Image (tube, rainbow, N blue to C red):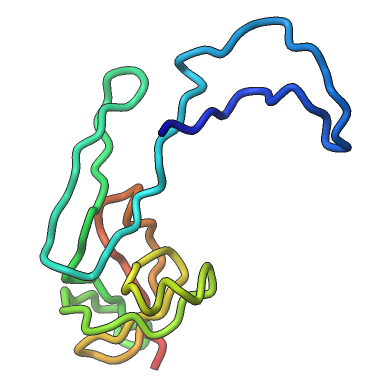
Length: 126
């Protein structure tokens, strides 16, 4: 099933409006990709204009920045602890921007968008 990002034919209050044209292919979207905590797997997706976007289907490692020492280290993600986007993502081990993950160095907050950037960057909390 595709997502359509064009005009819907209704105003914010619910009144019906008549659209001046039909749907266009450029207004199509895609299903959200829930990046899981499993063995590393990435997907290449063609974008408008012929470019490529790397999407992380599943991740295992994160680049964690220690703010005190200003050093970045690639460490293994052990578990998802907290996710304000959706509490059910914690049970399913879905990694999104803003979620708190448990790593080998300690708890870290994810700063990148894994399903858009294809990589997990995080900042050490503790």
